[in-house]
Image (cartoon, rainbow, N blue to C red; front, side):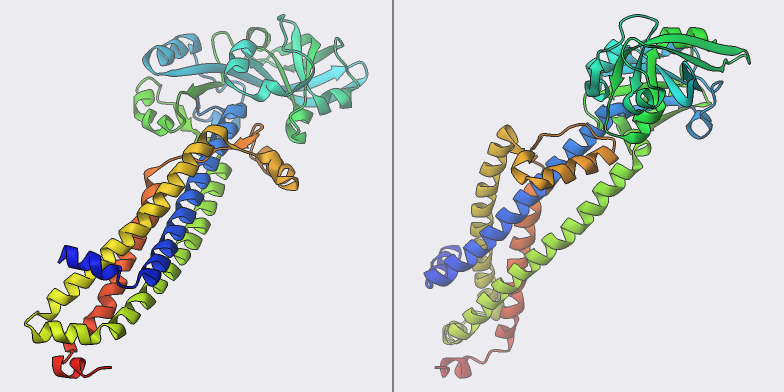
Length: 410
């Protein structure tokens, strides 16, 4: 029956080839589009998490909502060492405090963030946005947002004073010189943030070996959720571990919305192709009615004839799916190496950069498709199953076929 089904498939070569290439085109289009979609999601997540937030963070639980100076993670150095020794990650300590930033007669409110500049620059992309000067090298230097510097009338080398309240209620004061100006392109950050060496901020605000954030950078962002239970074992009861999904919910929600919308389009396309296959088997029924009547007159059961046509449908679906899958895999393999430059999209590049900026993303110059089981298997499986169902739906009428009447059909 298998050999007979294969020969029957090529009795009308034109129709078989048209149907097979229709299936192949749908498989190619959907598989490639899903690979591009998956690759763009990976790029978006990597850019967003490597800009400032990291892949996960450890905080004092109440600090997530209140952000008070006294809500710290104690013994930060020991915890940081434990995390880095036990897991494949880098832990970046940060402290933050609110205060008044002054230069001469001008004063504005801002948030002072104490960081390890060298470690942060090696792992994250935020400090690649320095528009003037460079990373602070000394304990009395600061990196100031471009809008804040403009509002203060300050420039490189100018002295600024930060006044705030220390952890024990005393006055915290810092005198810093501007070693660099940061221009992220995000007005809220550039207007309110300034960065200083973490040791200097801890000393000024009486924080000792305490931090407000331990920013975790993982080898693979997908491991953030996997490590949750293991990391929690090292934390105190009042401390929390948050993954990038909790830190950047707008990124995850945007990805999910785009994924669902795209999947609806993909399945509509696959269903339309399945209807085209259905039309092919409707024509088969009318053309081969006499043949089926003769086979039944020779003693074949209806289920045997249906089974033979189902094998034909399987070969048809499999042939089209393999052609489309091979074409898609070759193109995805090539583009995953060279990428698609965003500059090729002209005005779309500016819109993409603006959207990424709103999501706290870094600069993305190329898009790379990504292989995945879902992208490579979804369309072939759906169309192979769709082809089988189309053939079965058409062939069910064979059960009611009268051999004598069928043999008289012209």
